[in-house]
Length: 243
Image 1 (spheres, rainbow, N blue to C red):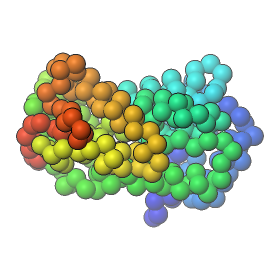
Image 2: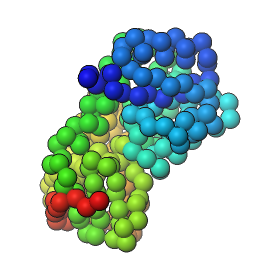
Image 3: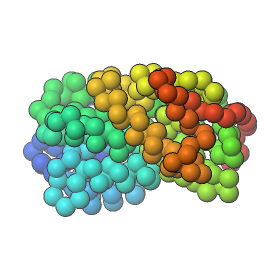
Image 4: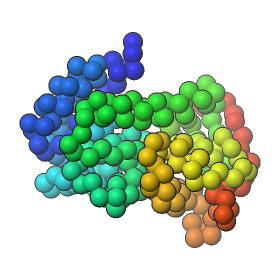
């Protein structure tokens, strides 16, 4: 079965006409599409169903897309692509900073959207594929299970990370004690056009530090290398996973 045939997408947009047309097009491309007209409907769908990706409008009545994206970033590693009329670079930066994986401005060519969907899914899948089956990463008392996308602390409590934060952490875990510059990190985490928003990686690192560092203002794990980028300054072990 192809990637598109097994991919379930949640399409969240308050414009019913646009939503119907786009959903119909995506279904013809082989995707399974579930629609939601607002954030309340989207939250209910996400709570009761499993999705591979969310297409999310920003400007909606009630809770907006930025707030919903922030909720998703804090609760699960689910890729998000914004589809919105807000096209200013500052809006894109905000979207990427809070955990979105890509950003498409209306009106857009639906073929471009499909290409971006597949690109985001490939980046997300590549991390799990590259990780040895049934192995987990251990570092400084933390454990990351790449297949389950589950990060746990020293006490075994699960700490939620966004899809982008997950890929960022995987990049560091696969290259411990190596300096990774912003361009390389952006390619790993955001993909194409990310170079336009190099501030996004800095903010995602700040978010990740707040989750795994004892003191995010004085980071010991993810260290800044002035003029070079960032480095995971600890040993990483790959061990057999435990259920």
